Image 1 (cartoon, rainbow, N blue to C red):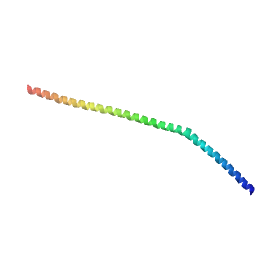
Image 2: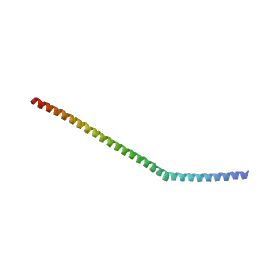
Image 3: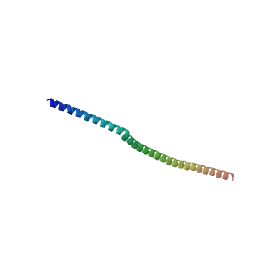
Image 4: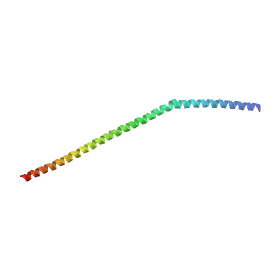
Length: 102
């Protein structure tokens, strides 16, 4: 009986030592993770996300610029059409006035 008690005490002390070692290992892993792995991961992922956002923004700006150019062309054509129409109306008015004077 005495031997079994002593054996169990030894087992308990060995398990406590292993537990303590595991706690130390776990602390080391946490330190490693928070000091090296996580920051690297965050820089990598965050950097990729940032780069993707920048590319999307540049694409939006490019598309907006192209749309604005097209709208400007349309406005120019409309203005030119209105100008030509007014010019033709004015010319026909001038011609009709000249014919009335003759």
